[in-house]
Length: 410
Picture (tube, rainbow, N blue to C red):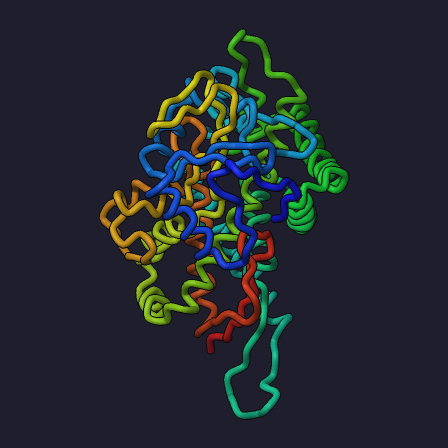
């Protein structure tokens, strides 16, 4: 991610542009200990929270820290606001109620086997298509090279969205490609390209909305139909354009983080062969491993809120109306909460305390689905390979995170 705004001499920190995430975590560590409430003039200016307790408190207090002004930094270059991410209670409530209704345990149980088949098919297709004979003839083990993030992660994430939203199968590859282009344009703050790709996503959302408005489905298992059930705080039906915006948000919400996290997980397991072998030998350990991976490698560094009144914290005053970033990536490595925070610890005692999915009313709506999908993806990767290792440069915080060299299982 690049920024053109130069820093002020009075800034507490400057945003780091580097493919080595250790440099970013080192900056978080320094700020956490010396300047836990920090300010920069970059991207229009914002405050940064790095201590776990401060981040958790801000994320949980939606009465003080609101989302309707700015939810991410840098924000959408077109200034568009969509529910539920960019709304506050009570306007936020019906959208979350509708989405949560479609993510209950009973439905997730039905979706599990479907997603497993999608993951197996997509990974096998990639492995078979990229099969490489050993050029030197000195190995009997065939190998394949795939980008586990941009290829498998993106395609599988699209199928997760298709299954959850009950879309037609042919939409999956369109969604994967369009969402990738939209994410990259947004990160580059390319307003024209962001708008072009967003328009394609809106077309999908409008088609879905029109179909469900004409023929509703079971609201317990269909997000669009569930949204159409809800009414606003005034008791009136929700505005059609806002409902379409919520569906547009739902189309991409699961397309950004899972591919990045899958890349991080496989990169970690490439370095830690003992852990890779342990998980292969006992697949029941995968849920605990995924949870620790989420803590360590939360894909979103943080989300933004805006205080409604001045906030005094650690000897500094955050003025009302100035954006504040709740840095989940820093909070999840706070040594006051997580012992040996930079180390992967399987079955960490307080792992449920991590903020990888946020906290409070704006916690990740798709949290239970994301957990299940990540577990399925990692299980399928381990079951369908004998080994894998990084084969190419790693790119931090980009949609195409990494390349992987995957070795076939016999």
